[in-house]
Image (cartoon, rainbow, N blue to C red; front, side):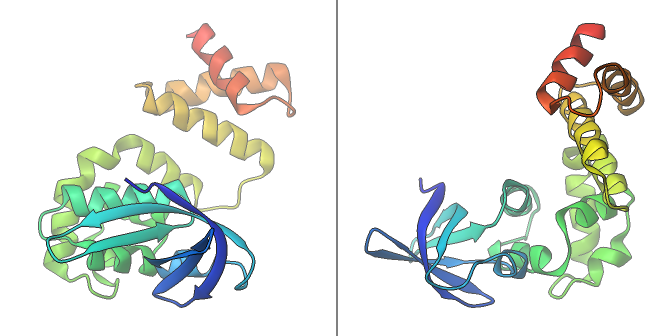
Amino acid sequence: MITHLRGKLAQAHPTHAVVDVNGVGYEVTIPLSTYDRLPPPGQSVELLTHLAIREDAHELYGFANPEERDLFRLLVQRVSGIGPKTALAVLSGTSVAAFKGAVVHGDAKALAQIKGVGKRTAERMIVELKDHVGVAGAWEAASAKHALTPEEQKINDAVLALISLGWKQVEAHRLVRAVFDRLGADVEVETLVRDALRQS
């Protein structure tokens, strides 16, 4: 399994890129969100990848960050009738946080506005992904509605970590905020999480 590529960007197009890794050129299909983050050709680049193996082809998909790749995999593996093409369309048409927010709130209208996603597909995404996105997705989507300061980002990341461990959103925020107020703005996310767990 190829999980990432690190090399020089040989070509960059809105739908695909070519990464030169020690003289071997890998063509990678990408969403627009990843294309927007690519450096100029000739510079170093690293893409997280997902390898899809079919009877007639091995296709490599590339992503700028883990969140994009995770959502791509969630769509193709958990939603019936969704293939890589539609999953890429979702990533090209909305942010990961906005998508999760639409799923959590059952906003099929917002999802149906994405090119390549109709009303029925949008409704199917909501039904089949709601349990997988859950409260962490709701918290992330709410946080994305406004620009976070570095201090707020630390608190947000720590809260998401506790939620992923099974804590309720309100309790997670209370614990993290208490540690942050006690240790100050220079505290690291790992320390916030560790000390919050000790207090629980």
